[in-house]
Length: 203
Image 1 (tube, one colour):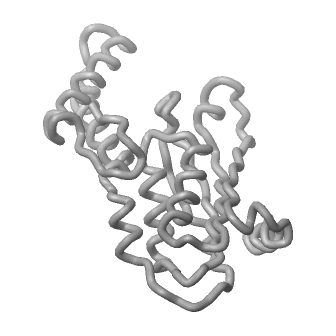
Image 2 (spheres, one colour):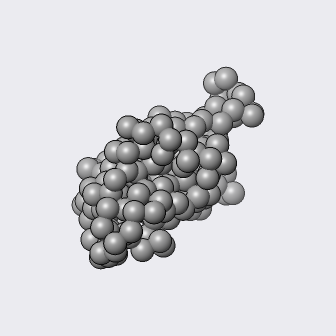
């Protein structure tokens, strides 16, 4: 099975990738049998393999070394103007029900002598999104990773998402969206900085 590991370091699936996929296939086969009966219909024969391959892809964030991703893209720059990357599309998997949640992430920071390559911010979002996640945790992880490697004056992260566990089961509220935010440094201390960021992302 795919191991739940610390949120920064990369890992491998099970004892090795191939073994992890086989274990996953076997587990999915048993789940299908419990739903439909003891014998799989011909149409479902390849489903366990497809599902194992799918989970490998949508949890690929465990394979990303966030330390390496950040360390190799930080540059010295004498600026303290706000940097914002907005509307970063992401897809993740809720760890409570293994159903998707998806939406957009808005990231901003105020540099203090260091900046990061712009393309690395969406990659950072993906690194944390492509795991078994909670939206609240993911929001904080993105903010803390930027704070750790850039030591900026402040970091702001806002995540808006639709959760299929709310649409397909439970309360079944089709229009419900979840918004989470993490405000660090100057964004937490100065309401005017926080307001500027929220205004620039349209909130």
